[in-house]
Image (cartoon, rainbow, N blue to C red; front, side, top):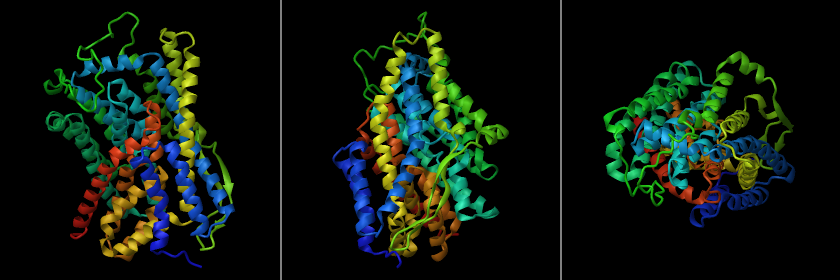
Length: 538
């Protein structure tokens, strides 16, 4: 019996996602409250409409729990590194240091929320840039909700070629692209990603102070975007593994020199900026960096320097990486099948985790290094260690509930065929106009799986087969797909939770989603229009 693709099945497959978004956006539920409801809906639909058995659902749920652990082991140390930095009052030193580097408040926000977050995405990924970047922005005086939004968009452009191109490699392996096809697809992907990157800079500027801020920030936006986007286009044709990392490093250097220019060196801010949390008395610039026991900006950044150094050493020294990657942890899963014949392959070791090269370990080591260093400088008061530990656990528990529920929901939907019905049903109805929706499929994939890599694995083959069936340009469709996946990472509930947790606004995920959803939809439509026009001439 073959899985039917009809209107009823499509509506049922879409229902858990629509319900989740409705609860979070319209009714302002937190992810910890909304996710279990979405999971329950997916469970019932799997049994009633998709003819799945409890064994299959149980095994897919187990996969979800295991996959969610990868996120959780990042959440906990990410919160820990934030709490260590907060306890040492290092955010004050970072804010004061940035004011010395540039008195332009908009450039300060770009430096952390776009350039530094991009750098972290280039080497770590897996939500680390958001977990680290959001609290740093809060430390600059950015409103917590906006800090999460900016960090989410800041990391988006690096979601295909970042983390040393793991998402890109997954797409290539899944679709079997060869030689010239690889480079053509990489070119299309980097072109569309450049659009996401440029829009990110404009969003930050516009949100900070509308046209006045856009005018002030435009030179910096153009320079940074040329380095990020233009650099990625070039390197995607030479070495995809470094196509996000090297441009993000160059952008760090560029932001330093931009801060030295007269345009950005002189003090400038917008007093009533909707981005900033203006406390009473904040109009007077306070600078405690010269006090005897204060930290310098470099000292305050010790945990983040440690994170960068550890990550680069482990990931860029291949012999060391190979040795550390030999220890893999995972579980075996048997083959399962629904009554409709939707098959889930058996795994000897499912989604293996390499503990010694995991971002969570890097964050944990960095937090420990930061704690020891701050304590040696007398910045951790008596009882500080207990306070840090207590706050970390308190913030981790609600996030854990939401992440587990969301990922189990996505696994059940994927394992029972609901995800495939969503995509294939849309393709059948759209026909030749399907090309317009190719980026949106990538967005959907990242939203559901919380990973562009997983989106490429889940939908890469489908996009390739559809493009061949409809005689569309395969490289353009796949490039737009993974670029859409990069954009869709902004909507990922688990990444939003990482940001709201470390920014101290857990349960406000619905507010964040409401702010970013219209932007993501607009950009996805723009990408679809450009792809539709471009494919008419190739």
